[in-house]
Each structure stands twice: as C-alpha cells, then as structure tokens.
Amino acid sequence: MAHEIVAGVISKHAFVSPTSLKFSGYIAYMSRSEAVRTESYASHNFAFDDMDFDGYNNYMSNPEKSSGLFSKDGNFLTKSQVSNLQKQFAVAQNNESNMWQVVFSFDNAWLEKHNVYKRNSNRLQEQVIMNATRNAMADLLKSEGLLNSAVWSGAIHYNTDNIHVHVAFVEPEPTRELMMYKGTLQRRGKLKYSNIERAKSRIANSISDRTLDFQKIDELVRQKIGSNEIAYQDLDEKRLTERYIKIFSLLPHDRRLWKYNNNAMSKIRPELDLFIEDFIQTYRQDEFSELNGLLDKQVAFNRETYGQKSRFDDYKTNKIHDLYSNIGNTILKEMSSEVSQGHATKLVEQGFSFKPQRLRSPNVNTINTSKIKHMFDKEYKSLREYLNLRAYEKLQRLVKENDEYEL
Image (cartoon, rainbow, N blue to C red; front, side, top):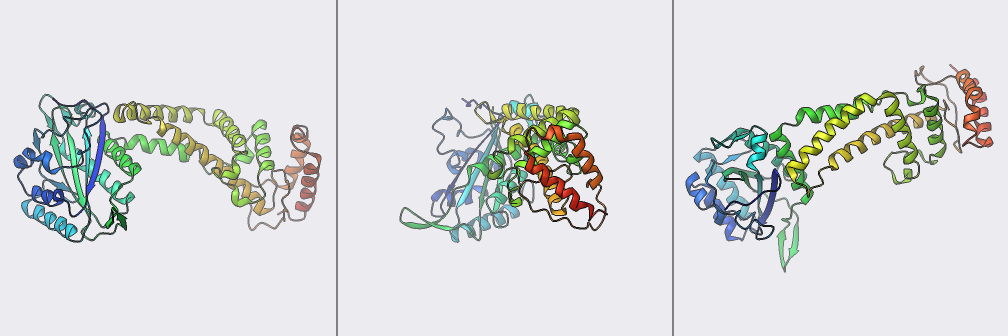
C-alpha cells in the first residue's frame, strides 16, 4: 500500500560516516543494473531510515522501476562514467568523508498538473526532473560550501503515487570541519534545514517553470514600483511632502544608521511605511495590484506544493517587505545625499551641522534657494504641526547661507 503525500513535494535527508557498512554497500549498489537496484533499493538507501513516524511506514517499499544513474554532467551515465563515480566515492570514503543522501518525493498528481507526468501511460519527462535536480543540488551544495568539492549521483524511482529522486553525494577531498562526537573526531555531517528547504523550493519551481513569474515580480519590486530613480522629495502631493519632512526630522544624528532594516530605525519605520503606502496608492496603484496578483498566485502554488502545514504565505510577506525596504532605503539615501551636499530641499534640519559647499555640477534633484524660500511661505502653517520654532529658524539660516553658494 502506497502512503499518502499531503504536499506536492517533500524531502528527506540523512548522512552516514565513512565507517558505516551502508557507505560501502552504496558504492557497490551504484554499479548494478536498474532492475537489480530497484529490487535492493530499501537496503541501500538510508535517507528514510527514520520514517517510522508520520504515517510513512510503507514508503520504503521498493519502487516499481528505477532510471539509470545521472549526475551534474550527464544523463543516463555509461558504465565507464558510473565506474568513475564509484572510484570518487571510494576515494571519499578512504579520506574519511561522510556520505549524504537526499530524496525529493513528488505527488504524481502534482507532477501531472504541471505537465511533467502522464498517469495513464506512466510516462515521465525525466529530462525535466533531472535538470530540476541539478538546479536543486547546485543550490544546496553552494549553501553548504560544498559546490567545488562534492560529487553526486542521482536516480529517478517510480512508485504508484510518489515518484521520487534519490541523490547521494560525497567529498573526495573532505572540507567539512572536524568535531568531537561520542569520543571520536569526525567530520560534521549535519546539513542545515533551511538549505534543504531552499533546495526543495528550487526543484519544485524548476519543474513548474515559475521563472517568468519570478522575473516579473522582481521587475515590479525593483524597477516599476520601487525605482531608485524617483526623486521622492519632489513629489507633487502636499501630504507626501509633509510626511517626507517629518521623517527627516526624526532621523538619528548618525547617518550610518539610516538603513530601513536597522534596529535604530524601529521607531521611525512606521512613518516611512505610511509614506510608502501613500506613495504606492497615489502613483503606483496599478503596478501594486499586478504585484499582488502574482504574489497570490505564488502563495497558492506554495500551499499545494508544500502543504497546509508549510509557511506557504511567507513568500508574499517577504516580497512586500523587500518592496518597502527598497523604497525606504532609496528615500533615506536621497536624504543623506542632500545632507552631504549641504542642501535642505524640503528637509528640516534638526541638530545637523550643515556645511554648504559649491556643487560640481547641477543636480536635477536639487532645489535652489529661491524654491526653498517659496516653500517656507507656502508650507509653514502645516510644518508647525510637528516642528518647533527653533528648527524653522535654523532652516531660515540655512537658506541665507545657501545664497552664497548658489550655482
């Protein structure tokens, strides 16, 4: 009886030390024919050794059939290529490397939905699975610092409800740090859970071909909504001007702290967020609606792919945060630039020592002193709601000083 998968993709991983009989057994297992490897699958693959819980008791039954071995460099490896891999695994064992196994298991209905598998004919686009596995392994090995030292082999195993990919990898020349474990010095074997999860996401996104949606999301976040070419100080809306000035008046003296995600900005960040919300609703509402649609689509994909128990909506939350962080840092960078140049341009000086200096070339984002004077007359009443008289007097002195340095 096949077990029930409650998500489109699940993963499991484990490792054994070089002294383990399972290490030696797997090296021999690699050279066997597909039929023999299928028959002896359960005894040579240990990634699911701890699956006696969560209702996976029957998972380790042998698959119906197995594909040939594939690797980073080739599909369906020849006997010579398999022999070379075996030698590298043997060298790794002699050099006291661990061996890791990772299994990515798929709900066949999920594969069918993404046009990779046809249930009636039991046909799988193995090339798609292999390429997706390569993407996932490249991500995992890079995250673990093993990209240039590890070698791996993989195989696709067919089951009634859960086709899966089994990957084993080693380091012929070990780089993992040595650590004391149970009285003996061993190389660290544990893989970070977050890295495995990211690899699982990579294989799922590769199979479902989410590339175009991801590119569109990043374009909206980085360019169309949160462009770094916008002069936020020059926006036409009066309420945005007032929010802009208020944000500047609250900033800490040390400009090195002017980063959206810096802890020193915790009390100011809500004001930045109000400005960003207002800006988006006023100038980027259509683009933001498009972004929301794409993010909701990804949330639905995450829910069906990783299950109800997964944090499937984190992607949307994180991307919205990226958008706010991008716009917030652009605003803060703009303010810092104005301070460096010695020009107030709608900024209220509060404790800074401005030192006006002659600019090297005209700056389209810089407002000249006559414009600052006009701003005083037009907006003084609204400024008084949150600025004290002393700050206003300092700004008047700044205007007078700027007259001497105007281009």
